[in-house]
Length: 231
Image (cartoon, rainbow, N blue to C red; front, side, top):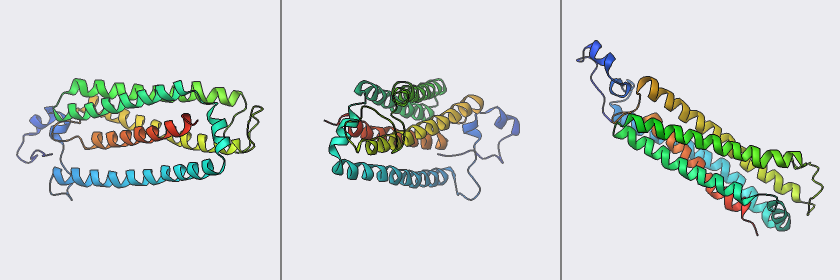
């Protein structure tokens, strides 16, 4: 994670170089390595707050499932494992491609860096499409709507609305994180195309966006069995 010395490099040469070569660390850092470490540590701290957010949802899930196991089993029967499983595969694929994009930045393989980012973004949009088109919309049209108050004529347990509150809360917040992650990766793709911003000596933003996406994937790995695979 080194940088170039702009004071001894002619301006014309610098302007013709890719963005990752022209990047200079902020003045309050000794060098680019310190900046990279500080940014990564800060982002790990941010991810810890995200874990706390979902930990609250998992605690709510555990408490209500312990109190109303029949309601959770009845509500889970409305979910299609094929859709949840497909989305799991989609996110696992996207985690691989985003990791490969970071590796391509480290080896200055600009073509495959962009291809892997495009695949990751497509996977994010596909996840969102499956979640809304095949899961949310059919439930809303049949009367199973977000919140404790809903008009589901097929409710098998009086506490089933509690299950749907947990389901919509957890999957809705997760879907929002999918959109945020896709937006971050889209910005990275734009900077890669426009400025060649990421390369062997500078890929901080790309790596942090990748860390965020891995968290999104990890959260779903927990949500899928808890919501879809209840006996």
